[in-house]
Length: 99
Image (tube, rainbow, N blue to C red; front, side):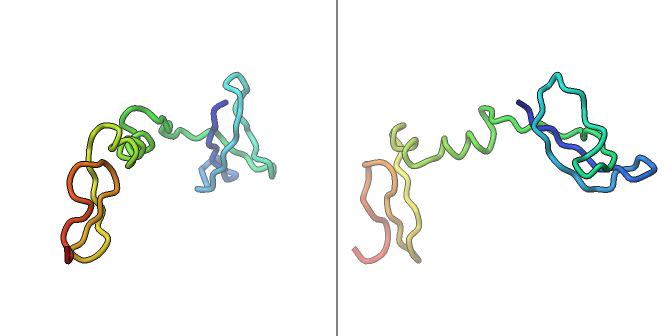
């Protein structure tokens, strides 16, 4: 079921800036009052879609496990001038520092 965002309206029908979310079926009519009895209307907002180029998908694509699976090697800084390998098996275990 989708989550809809509603905005609270003042007595003149203008938005007050206060919002709330409700999970509703698509076939249900929009709410006209909030749970406290104040007038409201459904707000128009950009959808949150976890597609191919979304932040959610991008983070998993760059995970250490996924990078290693794809044959990449990743190093992370562990100190000033010192890095450790955290993904992959190619290359030295550490870079920089006193070897």
